[in-house]
Image 1 (cartoon, rainbow, N blue to C red):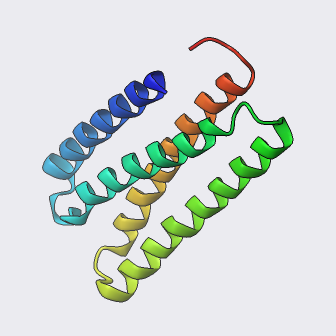
Image 2 (cartoon, helix red, strand yellow):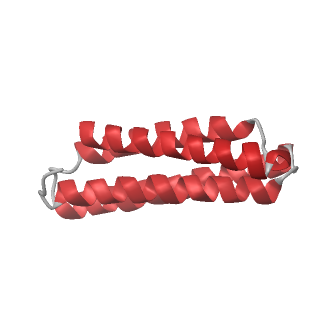
Amino acid sequence: MKSFFLKITFATIILAIAGGFLFGFFFPEAFSPIFPVLLLFGFLFALGSYGLQFSKINDNFSKFSRIHMLVTLVRLFVYSAIVVGYLILSGSNIATFVVVIAVLYIVFTFLETKELSKQSLGKPN
């Protein structure tokens, strides 16, 4: 769990720096104050979902696989609901918002899946 926490914290810091650089120098008009909140949400959601799945990793593999697929599906629905909610409530800079949330979804899902795969196969961190 500690290894994942360090990796996801590092990824979050890198995403924050990259976002600050991109929105500070190249696309300042596209920045929305909601972006840092999305980054924090993605970080916390990934930690929570990893913790849930990590607690089930020692169960039988089929049960773990079902939980992993369910958590991934719920994550997709939650992120999609956030996009729809933003579209309904704000509607401004929707293309930028979708790109930002898609990047967060892909990065956090990749890190979580990679770490869970290592753990389920019994490989060391």
